[in-house]
Image 1 (cartoon, rainbow, N blue to C red):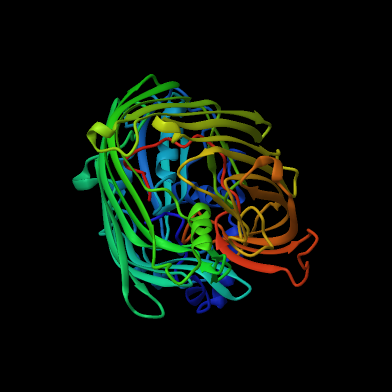
Image 2 (cartoon, rainbow, N blue to C red):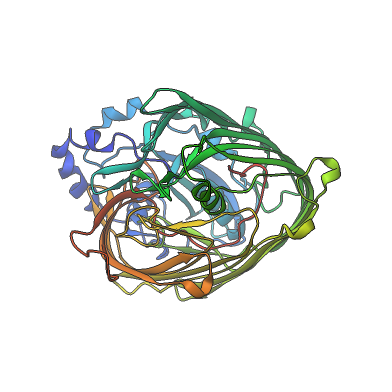
Length: 593
């Protein structure tokens, strides 16, 4: 299940114990056991002070190379004295077992303390969706040449009604409900149901996954759902997946492997808002049949400068067909097919791939989330991938394909700038070529006291479009204020500027505000871009008891001629409005349909 899902019955739980607010003030008044490193947020500092104070320990500002004499694990309750909730609510939640945290550690008692291993451990733990706060704190030992290590983690609520909502002006564009137990028996195994709703259909299914199968580093994930039409009740299809493999779980891991099978059979529809789009009065909907299978083996070299060399094979079928269009004029059907229907394609492709990157990271605050540390890779990040397909082994086209992407992240104080350049090219027989050029950049300003300025730009030019694929713009993403899916085209240009405030701790929730300006357009030809503009304000809220992902409410106003600025459009969704640009690394363990 996509880990962007994630806020359970937060508001109902919070409503029952407002009298406990007094405990927040009393906890904040406790004396601090010595200085705490300035790289932590206010929330994280308060947690460190509390846990050090309970043990009578003091922070060690220079632990490098000292012998680790003790490692302690402190797992925080979901609700504690910082929360306006009674403690008995915690009995409804499964806290991660200490041994589950300990097996993730890349350091042990009796070894010298290395900040490199401590930071990598923290990064690995922060990628576990079940954990929100992750802190690895060096503590003064019994002698000057000794150090203790305190590992602090805070679980998110494990018995959850995960949900993802995309709503515009009170209309639901997309809704996901994922009731689940995210930490079965404290082991990080996940079992749950799945309900997805869009304006035309709903789907119902179940999922099961475990990132450390039987205590190993192997992961397994499987899910299946069926799709029903909301109006007729007819079954329209199904989708699901099976994944099994072992990822690169640390910088010292040399081998990785994985295999997966994914399928989706349904009716694809393009929406403008909550209505199915039309082309020459024909509803934009068609039958879709997707199937993917692959195997990948990875050999990793180096530590600070990593070179991950992959070999594998993948098979993919993309079949698209229109429904019964006999009621429409032949000319309209031809125009509809040429514009809206993707081209069916099938390939069996061996591939070789190189991912070269540095393993230096900056740990920052208040970038994509609120009040929690975030890790961003510095320096170069390069991906090169070559694959081939032949009609002699079942492929639709004889082709040679390549993917090349390069990014470089340059720190600027406690901010950074990251440009990205890339291309995807399939050179095929009989002129059936498909090619995409992409450029993106992100500027994250140093903290200005009251917040950060984020400027993000993207340009995608599908200059060879045999497969007839298009981008959509509008809604709650890069062009807020316009209807979702309002603009479509083979090429896209966009620029977004957002001023995000520093978060405030309100009853343990991290709350921030934003003001934004969006500009962009999509078109089938780059020389026909007609830029649209919008602006607005928003609210960002993060509940560390439930997720690391912000809940976002934006109110956008179109500024381009021909579109009414007022009353604008209100959107409620999760995560920031535009994703961090970077180098996507294809893997059979993360492939999606």
